[in-house]
Image (tube, rainbow, N blue to C red; front, side, top):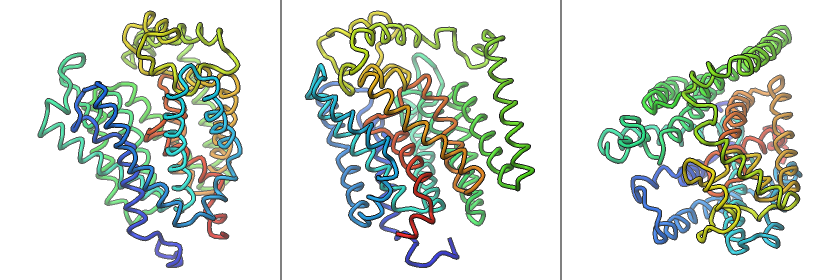
Length: 412
């Protein structure tokens, strides 16, 4: 940072706008303000509450539209994916819902793209870390000062949920936050004394959330960060780290296959992943009715009358689901094979660039661990192509930044 030309340093206003935008997408304000209300008035207010995030995104775009265009053009599969989202309006079972939510996911995606266009790797890490630091402090304050809000009392007595509706949301986000905070400390060593204490506080929240899945995700993310750090020590270290990573992944896969009961016990799950397999089965049954185009972007989960697909899925589930609990099934259900392929191509491009970047750019310390954890979570949660979603905005930002390096940004 100190060696950068002054013109390349983002202004305080730019950083503040980016942090404020991400804080809104985090939904860390929703539980303390609205509680667990799900009535129509609360839903209407929630839709309006995200408008400032869109406005901040457009503000950042206006500051450097040329780099925004250049960063976007390097994401052909993301453009294709957003095109399918828009096109699904024409075959959606609820066009008004797909229009509203399609606009929201377009703005969320734009917000991620502009972060990659406006910030270099070190600055992007700083923006993410400031955001997580504020969320960490907020989670402790709410859970300690207002335990009726921040601590669960029914299904999981004593488990902290902080600023979010569920304990797994707190644990999962804090696991990602630790990876980002540690990566920021490595990217900017002078600031390590600032970010590492926040990483320790985030670890405390993972423990207090009582989420074993989040703890497993954290271990995987830190191993991925260690892999990048070792791989960038030199060619010999890179080869050794790659061999160790491949061998470790193979051993883990064998353990899951051969000792699945032990694996589920360690995660605190049953063989149905807490009822998720019933949701997947019901969703796949409905996919067979409209495999190519699906039911329209995000249209199934808003059905208020119990029509068709949602009625079947809710009937088969142990609880009322809000999504398919699998990012891949979600795309297939909403946008058919066309949308699933578009998402798959965008994901494969992102992961391929991430692996290449591990051996070429220090920015991989920020991107690779997050993407590894994101990939794991995407198998049991719908976190891809999600409107007004914190994790989707970060994923898009990192995916775009992998294709729009600091050097390419400076050349603009």
